[in-house]
Length: 177
Image (cartoon, rainbow, N blue to C red; front, side, top):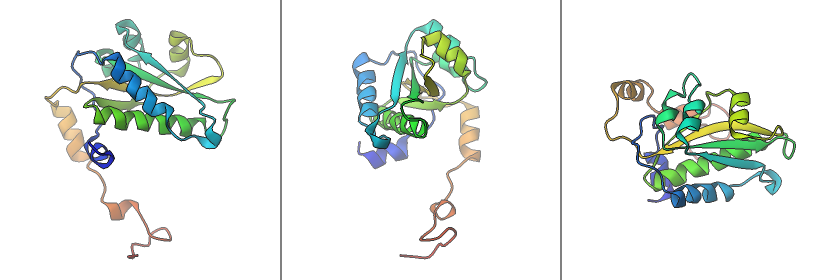
């Protein structure tokens, strides 16, 4: 699958099979993150892979994170704030998106989760004080049958047209090249 096909195919997945993701595949996702760009090449990130059922259950306490208890793997994206105070969030997000695209190419589903209590996540996983939790990334094999709720959300929240989200040369200009 080429990159653009992965971009087109990717969607937030909230329902997964119980099939474990092989360690080699998870390492491939981490390698995709490692190769991400970062400001001044500081690479202010660290990723904690969580496959333990009890820890995944603890990570599912967020209002919109309940499904994490049933996901085979959760990757916690952390940013080193002192190392890159202005850019750690952007850099960790770039690395996370590389993981999302690599996961899609590997036939996996993902979901970016921002619903968590940072202090609880840090305590649960022994994350040092200087590190900030940027996001949780659910990773697993998507269930084939999509729930009615997911279908309704997908229908109501369709992607905007290109001319709604882009301009040429100045904001609002829809002119041609």
